[in-house]
Structures are given as C-alpha cells and as structure tokens.
Image (cartoon, each protein chain N blue to C red):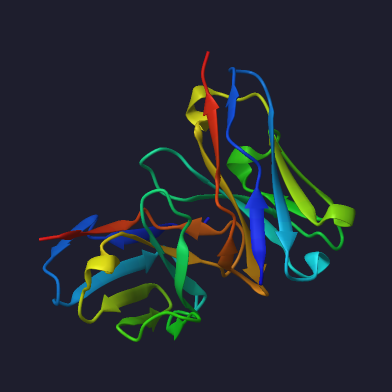
Length: 118
Length: 107
C-alpha cells in the first residue's frame, strides 16, 4: 500500500533553515510528483510547490520562491523540502502529498510540525 | 492565481440533516476541483475529485457538483464522524490553491 512517512517535528530559530523529508513506499517513486502543503496553526491549507522525482523538475509557489528548495533521492525513495530564512510565521505543519496523475491528493504524509521560535 | 472562496465559514447542522457547502473560483477551473475533509491533528482526506467523482472508500452520502466557477459539496445526512473542516482545491493550473475552508459543527 502507498505510504508517505515524514520526518519528525523540528524547532528552529528565526533565520535558520529546516529540511523535512518524505519517504515514499508502495509505488514507483519516479512515477508521480510529490507536492508540499503548509498549514499554520488553526489556519487553512497553503500549497508550497512540487517536485518531479523522475526529472528533478520543480515548481514553487511565488510566495516561497527564493526560500524553498525541493530535492529528492531516488535510491531511498525520499523527497525533501528545505525552507530557509525561517520566520515566526513559518510555524506550521508541512505535509507532503502524492499526486494522482492530476494534482489532487489521495495520499498524504502524516505532517511535520516546524516551530520557529527564538 | 485563481482564488477559491468557500462559504459559509461555519455551518451548524444537526446529525441526520443535510449540509450544503459552496466553493467559488475567481475564474473557470472547468471540473478540476477536489474536496477534502480534515479533522484535528490529521492530514486532509480526499473526498471528491473531478468536481463530482467520489474517491475510493468515500460513502455515498458525500456528493459533489458544479463546473466552471461554482461548486457544491453535499452531505446528505450528517453523521457524527462528518463534523470537520472541508476544503476545496482547484488543480487546473499552477499555482494550485485551496479555499479557506468550511467548518461543519454540531448544532
């Protein structure tokens, strides 16, 4: 069965960077895009961008451009999202999700809480 | 960027009643519209894609309709497990965007 397992919670200081991992199993990793979605506490869902694990191509939402980098390691079926220059308003749960051919998400990771605090 | 607007923000419904949630797109998204349910501490759960196709394992009491800019999610007879926040999302182009959510609460 398809599973996405994310790395654990992180606490970072303002200005630091965080790298969240998303390990995929149960399907061909290079066959589907991995997307990342942010959810601040008590708030809605915000799309961050995607990575194509087949080509390495990426697309980042404009609000995150310049601060986000998505990478992948096919050998361990893992996608990564790194967010730099962290601010307190980056405190959020970050989810990875696999697309379904089209970009809606049946499969989600469990979420990773990133807390930015001095 | 396509802006997705959901209404109402909160919907108070008694168990067994019908719930109707709305989602409007700022420009046409054709039928490239998905609905999700989210409960506290959980990842979103896909309910509907293609505006009206139920995802695998979703009960028949959930139905979606609409195309273009106006969409509706209907829960025909609310059960206790259905009280949650519901989001719509378009996937017609980049960037993908979500609506702000509708919280369905017990009346």
